[in-house]
Image (cartoon, rainbow, N blue to C red; front, side):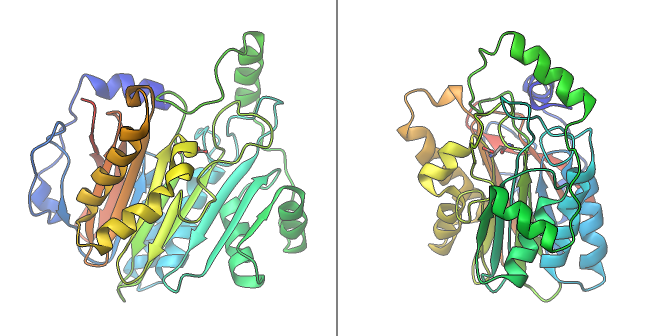
Length: 330
Ligand code: SD4
């Protein structure tokens, strides 16, 4: 379901979820989304942005429950929506840019602060796997565009057309009246950011997207930028972001969330503070969407967005669940 439809669907409905005690959450604090849990989900644990995080978490969980590393879990997990043409905001089948080209951004970070990233990558279905190779097999953190593609091919990745007929048709319709600004607001976003805490207590994260639909050619968002769309500090916690990447880039959003946790805030408090800082600097924050999802070393979870409708998938030993994030706007 695209975000606009989900937004409309959820804006009037506070989805009801099974008892929070099923997942071991401690409490539900007061705010405008009463279904949003705060608290401890334990270890191991995986969380992901949006509904497409549910099947992604399932794959990540297979690694985590066997005692696998969080870094392997998040890489394998986010490859699920990357390969799914029905998820039109990540990987294969993603919305193209204004020129009709699908360009992908992704990054990955482990518990030792190793990280890898690719941006403006074309024709490779699994940018997260290329980002992992950048992390493991190069002295660099980030490769972009043609260089990232050349590197991917040298690592054995095959080039393929990522523009599906469905995405092409939507782009052709958009082109007839291309007035939609190249902005992510409340309508066109759905990156997957995934965070995991493994049995050994190590944290890792991954983030992958096709970015803003019909963006300017060459536009790169927050998702491949360490600190903006993803950040992991194994002493503290991890955060990932969704929504209008430019706002996360201007504020180094996910780094902020982790730093706020370092000062003693819970993941929920940290996400709320980071969103509030962004909103405070905007002339009219109601025009935008940003959302953060965070976990800490103790297996506590938090999420917060400007707009309602942001949700996240959580899987731990008690099961899996799709949870409404709290939001600044009802
Ligand atoms: C971007 N932040 O490229 C991404 C898009 C997104 O949920 O998050 N979608 O700006």
